[in-house]
Image (cartoon, rainbow, N blue to C red; front, side, top):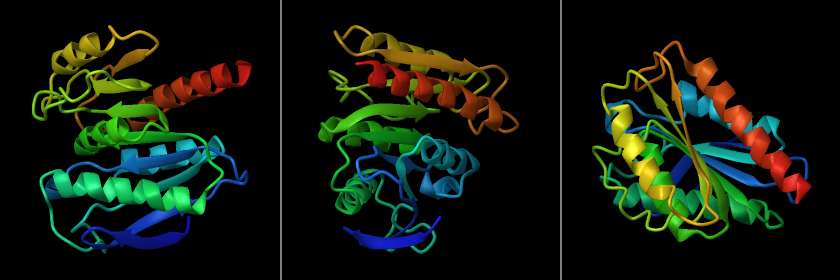
Length: 217
């Protein structure tokens, strides 16, 4: 789990990078929750997602948005954080020039940033969106959503009710060739306290299905 530092729009960005053994392995970038509410790359869900992708042979990066940990700059209400995420993806691609595909995973605020990055980068073939705050942030830019992916939400999320995410998923499901799935974790809150293992198992099952389907093509 080597520590890495790379250039971002607001100065250096601190991250952790797991290189894959295969030069052509997919890339995954994991985005953490809201910086002003304690979100960092060491968030338990972010940490477990990082290893989930690594265990499946991918090159994985998690990093701190500007102003978090040793990353320079200050919170920019999403716009700067999206630039940070784009710089992070650029950096991983520069290290893995033979990688053909990419996954984006985001948690809470990171989910909103991740879905915006998805819209800008056609090489992103799949996404994992956890605890998406569809009642707080505007997701209308997903028109249409360019990649298939998974939304996971806690049944007892008091920050964003499950119904808000269900409404978003229903809108996205109408697109041809794009499959949007949603899973609800029983009894889980917005932070998946006591439910991280179940959450990661759900995401792992989904990833395994997507990887197996790709091999069969």
